Length: 341
Image (tube, rainbow, N blue to C red):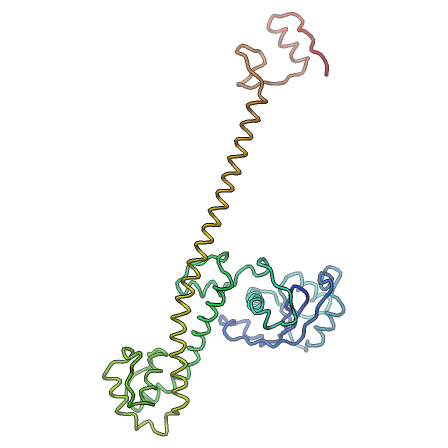
């Protein structure tokens, strides 16, 4: 697929494997390749009701191949481009999530774009990010997410994603552990498997860190069977995997602690901002009420009991004809004529 990404000053084109758009884990696995970027003096003329700018048409046609779809960030772009260029376009939630991700990394992915995105351009916050924060146990509103929270969440996410890859690789080592040592490790997590391969590769070393991860009898069994893994274990590869998993574990703890602190600060600032807004609204409402009461008190005429022009406690303005009729019905003579203004 092609992806048309709008920046503050122009449009960039990326390519990626479009099959991933249909996967729930799309954000985990999509890799982008920047193809081109074009700056516009007046970007509003690039895509509008009159059509598509010829330079943008050339840019798209340069990279578009038969059968390719074009991902765009606005429904109106989809309508206009499909009508003018006859290229099928996509604009759905998965595409918008991808667009949001590129926005956060715009400085790296589109280095020629010097302008910065406004806060409004960065909203709404990615649903994937909100889901990830929720799964980590953080109750965060989209308005609370700032760049520091985003970067800490990214670091935490990459630790988990890297561990997921390492887990798949360590499963192969787990098969050898099962067959050679007779230890059932199908349900072990990535840390247990990493510690196990460390013991196999370095049986003479004592486990100073994470010694509680594996039971003592399991550690003894792996140390005793270590010679049996000769020719099977790729020592350098297994140790590198172990060090990566341990590094991710420590980084995860640090980043989660940092993320918790950032979320608490953001929540406190958000609540203070909301309270300030409520106070302003309340104060504004009270000011309006005071002003209204003042206007009413100075503008309302004095009402005398028995005045025939009073109805339901309000002064009613009547036409001269109606006043004359009321006066005659009450037994009075011709009323005094009021001066004209």
